[in-house]
Length: 225
Image (cartoon, rainbow, N blue to C red; front, side, top):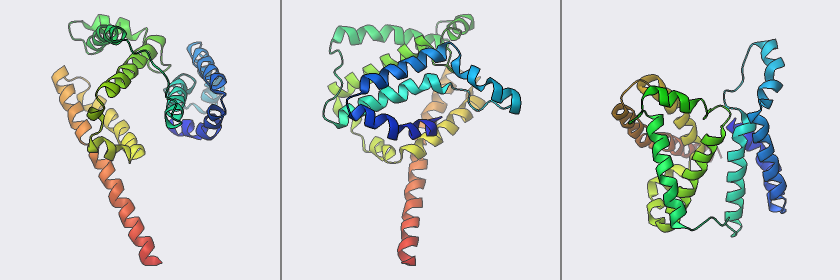
């Protein structure tokens, strides 16, 4: 799915740069709404019936909204015209309690499994349901506000190092997430947090491997020349 979205960049980005961002964003929101009505599964149904294969679990019509809006934010920032977000401290702090509650429900902290199951029914992951989308937007907003208030927190060399090899790190993180679901899916919250900490720490590995691979490739080309 990520590769499919990357193929859209040469089409979407020029439209944003030409001032047609509202058309792009409106189309993105329209696709997300269509996804909530089951548009993508309906389009894929003949293919599934014919070949018996479901290509993706995550609905690209829904998840594209994160990619497109992220592309818009990034393009505005690169052009020196960052998107203006609310600066109210009250608004920012008001987002914290519902985020903590959603986290507690998801990990069954102070809530039993029945509450988590009820919440899962209205926060579907595959089609990025409205509450899940709002949760992501709130986290992203707080991340931006924190980075504005404390920029030094985001200037770690380690983060910059990972960012230089983002595709490799992202691919590795997907594999680590699936491994986590298999190994620590039924573990206690402490066990899950421990695995998450280990996985985050190990993100250096794919970046280091990529550095070594590029160095050897460059040396091989230079020696051949």
